[in-house]
Length: 382
Image (cartoon, rainbow, N blue to C red; front, side, top):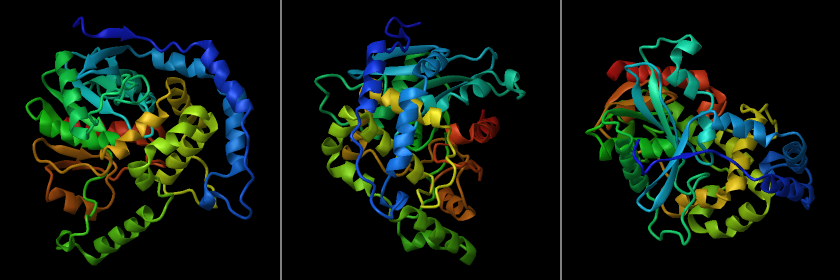
């Protein structure tokens, strides 16, 4: 292995965990807005109960151990320390696959899919489709903190993709696939364009075919497909307005993210729920186990990266995945046929799945569905 790559283990000092619990215990709770539930923001009683569970029942050491079951490393690329999981399969013909996680999330997102991808035999799957998994932490996230003083160059999607290409080259992989969700779905097709010589396919959960407002995009669609797009648009209107705020004033929110674990938790929980098509006052059951949500919150808090993870909005790195024809594209949870028809005009779609997930964080909420989508796509092109 290259001497530039160093082994890494997550070892959080007990004093930092004790400090987190003490801060949670000292939280000053606001009054609840009369008559309002999720429509006014995260309800006080809901968050207070979750924070109490975080303080008294959640076991960080258990989840730290789960993460440390996977080989982890760091390397420096373009002045940035990059942390990554690197889990090699025992299957001789395994395809290298780089996974890029979501925002606001971490590599903990992939805990339930790494095993089936790298060791399909143990999960009752065909070993002919096995993968060497590389899962880096995005710059500014978790164990890939920004250097101090911070590099003044913005971490654009293109810069992240170039870093991933260098990482895969440094690991000796000359032919590999790429998968991503949310922020990862922005990086993945960009990586395909930048490193088309080595990327065999670009797989994302969703995001292609979303209309931009050009009337020409609706040409040839049936009335039913047009109606489905209109219904989808309702899902993306309204909401909290967090995106424009982060695009313009991320520094203001950073103080709460860095000084108050409850402020950080409230923002994170609202993002997870807002992405999932609610909150609504009906308050359906959460699609993601609360320990997984709190593992993500704990990693952000213990690495002090909740604020820097949101800088991507200010730096113009948020948005929708780019269209590309440099390599084949697969989409596992792409949605309606109307989206596929629009996407096919600007992408080489090889596989389009209409998978179902209770959450935008698909790897956490529907891991088997995502594993099936990845295997179906790469099974067609590898």
